[in-house]
Image 1 (cartoon, rainbow, N blue to C red):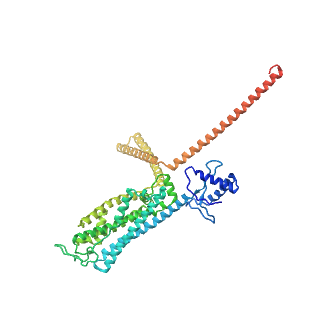
Image 2: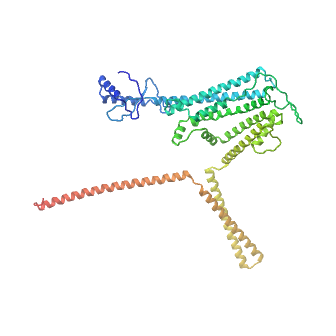
Image 3: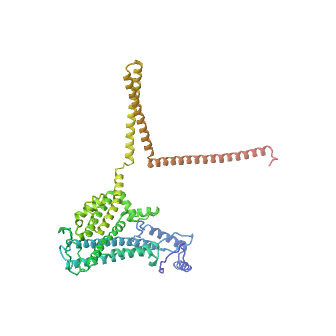
Length: 521
């Protein structure tokens, strides 16, 4: 047969008149009738459908070249053309793009962390190990700039893959449709954040020695000032300090990496159920899942990393003043007491940058403390089964105490009655009266406590138990409905039988009347 180029189908699966005529000519040339061709295509389509992998949406090629997918006939006697497997290839391309996005995001995070670690290494080693104009400083600064350039390239590649994924998801052909103003603004802001790195004069020699201020003794154990040339003055120092601190904004890539590498996004069952319930798989949803599954690990890991980063940023801000807050041990202590909102007042930041870091630390401390309290409350709370056991045992204990209290009331009543009959000492009479009133008070208190306990226990609605009860009621109603339906059907059958009997009886009566009176017809 002549080869045909597969084309895209329309909504109704119909093609033009030329294709119908071509199919009719092919039928005539091959010598087969249309029903025979339909039967052959149905057999071939069933064979192809049995080899389709429903999980990944990719056709297995076990020695057979399967490039087309069959569709059912819309009209009896009219064969529809085979549809090209564009959807299969779209799913395959989407899966490959997701893998590329995962890989690019991991590389971008690694590159960002490498540049940040090089910046920290340069700030700690200079000028103890080398000077600002040495070859080592030049190599480290070039490495930071190269890592920044690689990071920008990876970010652009990531968004290129993201735009291609958007085009595949929405079946568009023009990439400019995906370039909305919000996307352009986000990409621009992301490139601006990733491009931030120290760009001072790397080749000039001359680091200002620590100048002793009046009333302040220079301590050689303090951290060194920022390693830049003194020729450009204090403005360059402030700029280098700001750029070094802002490099930590690259850590926003952590949340993207967690999202793309999470099992929630990779699981097909998660995505299917989420799409049915209109749930967007964002970082917020993944963070909720992590806080629900591993609350202690997630929160403690975030607090520890934030503590170290904020402490180093504080030392970077405070080392220019040669104060004690410029040392790492003092900064760790200051960040800890600020994070816990204690504030002993023994140390405090001196620079504006240090004050901003401490202010942000206090805000994050309040938020993390609230989450920590919520996590501890959830961990220490009793679950449903433990609450049932606890309330059941408390109810048994209170019932025992109520029986003992009722017995004490009866005993004190009997003793008081016996004292009244014997007309003994009035002191003993008053003693038994006081004991009776105390026993009555204890009995009433226990009864009130038992009532409160049962009211609180009755508020705990056992949803699985209610579901089982509703299922049993539904099953009983279904059984009753079936029995009623069977009875109605049997009554209809009996009525039909009665109608048939009445009809036969009327026929017999008519025959009997004709037999007696032949004149009656």
